Length: 398
Ligand SMILES: *Cc1c(COP(=O)(O)O)cnc(C)c1O
Image (cartoon, rainbow, N blue to C red; front, side, top):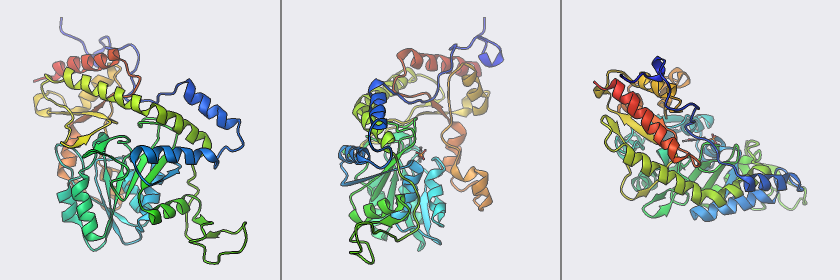
């Protein structure tokens, strides 16, 4: 009897839905948060700095500034880099909108550089081609956890006097040529949203080795107000005295969140080990699947794997990605698509961006499906995903 897809009324491979990602919280995490709730400070207390120190030490950076979320981290990084009206910021279309929105927040224009078709990361040659007199910064994203090709990007940005911002929302713990991301670019931003490597509920961090950039980050996250005697225009007024020097925001993170962050940092090595084991398992189970390209790992990079993305050779199938995706969802597999090219969004279209800008990213977008990947996912879950893929793809092979 031929198999009947769940999409067509057959029995699904799984009886319960498997999400593409989720947080992993244990009793110690809960205990850490409860302790702060019973302490003197809920928001700006001692735990923020403890969390900042943990992350700085882990990535090997001199400075770390914790902030409300990963989007605020990118906004603050653009502020620190003095991105302003009339400037251009070069980034990739194959990312979450926040990587480009941060330029718009500062009145600058995002310029999209096409991707490398193997790594799916921003292509340094395309960046070079797009640098103009208006370019102020480059936002390189470590897509899926694989570090962007930082060496040529550093050379280019140094040469041209630009700031390199690395959006490492996917890559806490990843390495580029033997060094952890976080101390390589001028500024590196992280997100602690529940689907990322560690979570604080909402939360973010910017790391840097540059003291001046760090001071600008800290000012920006509290309204642009400072008490720093190096910065005050009229010092020696008294202990109450502070000055608002620029227009900042309330982008503070709380001690409650940072307590969770510290506790999650204890667990990060285990989370990474689990992500890598799941990826290895997918890689071996999918090795013989026709029409499926597994993720590529560039030489010299070690990814901590935020996402596991397969690329479909659509020419081999009777159905398109839309139908294959729907069939997998019907089997109760929480597949996803990362990402819709940023400039496809109606808001970006309204700003005048046209389709066709980055053909490689656009072609990739048509073919990708993200498979579930998170610490705590069981071997049987991985097998269910592979079983569902096998069932659905066999149904649709030409
Ligand atoms: C998650 C994410 C962000 C934004 O982080 P938030 O903490 O959700 O604001 C930015 N860039 C990329 C690539 C992301 O995946």
